[in-house]
Image 1: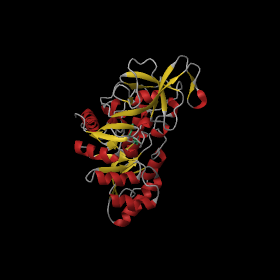
Image 2 (image 1 turned 120 degrees about the horizontal axis):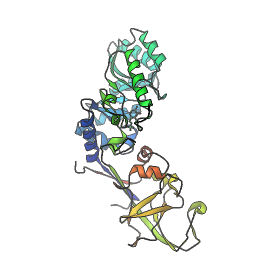
Image 3 (image 1 turned 120 degrees about the vertical axis):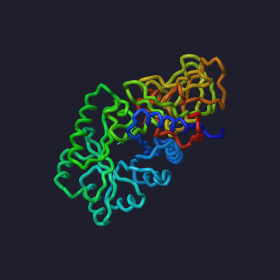
Image 4 (image 1 turned 90 degrees about the vertical axis):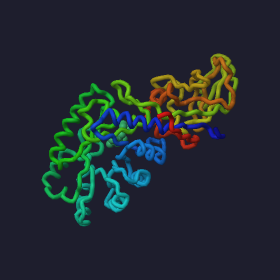
Length: 370
Ligand SMILES: *Cc1c(COP(=O)(O)O)cnc(C)c1O
C-alpha cells in the first residue's frame, strides 16, 4: 500500500462471477450489464472489458459520452444509450460511435426516423415505454400517436422495447404486476421486438419479469437492494482507510465541528483519512441514520463519533483490546460491512455509496478467485 489515504479494492473476478450467476438465473433471457456512471463508480475502463471477457454482449449506459467510451472498450458488443438523443446534434455522434439510442419521446422517434430515411439505411433503435414510473419513456398517448403513423418505423430497426419498474425492490408491491401489464399493452401498439423490463431487483421477481433481456447494474457490483431475500451475488468492493492519528480525549472535551460529541469517559479517538469528499456521506455523522455507523479496525467495531468532515472522520477506539496506532487500517467496506449497512447508517442507498466512492483512494483491481 502506498502513502494514499486508503485503498479501494475492486474484485473484477467477483463482478464476472456475479454476471455469470445472473445469466444462468435468467436464461434463456439474455443478461446485459448496466455500466452507466463509470460502472457505478468502479471504473468502466476495467469493468467493461472484464464483463466482455465473461461473455456479456450488451451494455447499457446513460450518456452518449459513456456510450462512446463503452464502444471502445467493447468493440463487438451492443451499446444502448438510455438517455437517448438530447437533440438532433446527437445523431451524428450516435451513428459514428455505432451505439443504439433508447428513444423516449415522440420528438426523438420522429427525428431519428427522418434522419435514417434520408440516409437510405435502416438504423437500429430502442424504444423506452413508460409503464408507470413517470420518468423517461413514451406514454400511452405517444404510443397511440406512433401507431397511427404507419411509416414512422420503416427506416428504423427496433431492436429492443423496454420499460423500467418503480418498486421492484418490494416483491409485495402491486405496482410490479401493474407495470408488467401496462408494458404488455403498450408493446402491442408497436413493431414486434425483443423486450426488456427488469433491472437487478426486477429479475428477482421471477421469470415472468425477464422477457428477452434483463438489465442489472447494482447486483453485478455486489448490491443487495432486493427486499424479498438475498440476490445470489458476491460482494465486490472493500475499502480500507488509514488511521492518521490517535488521540486521548478527556472527559467533557468535544470532538469535531459543532462539538456534537462529548467524551463521557477518558477516550481514545482515531482520526481516519477519509471524509465526505471521498464519498463517506456526511449523514453518517453519529445518530442520524437508521443504523449505527461504524468501521472495523483489527476486527473490532469502532463507532463513528462527531461530524464527518471533508477529508476526515473520527471513531471511538477507547474499549479496544488491541491498541490502535497511527498507520493502522480501518475497514469502511468489507464483506461483513456492506454497502447496504453503510447506506442505512447514512440514510441513503448503496447505489449512492458506490457511485460516490472517492477518486482519492488508490484503486486496486483484483481478479479474485472466480
Ligand atoms: C440504472 C438502470 C438500470 C440498472 O438498475 P439496477 O437497479 O442498478 O440494476 C436498468 N434500467 C434502467 C432504465 C436504468 O436507468
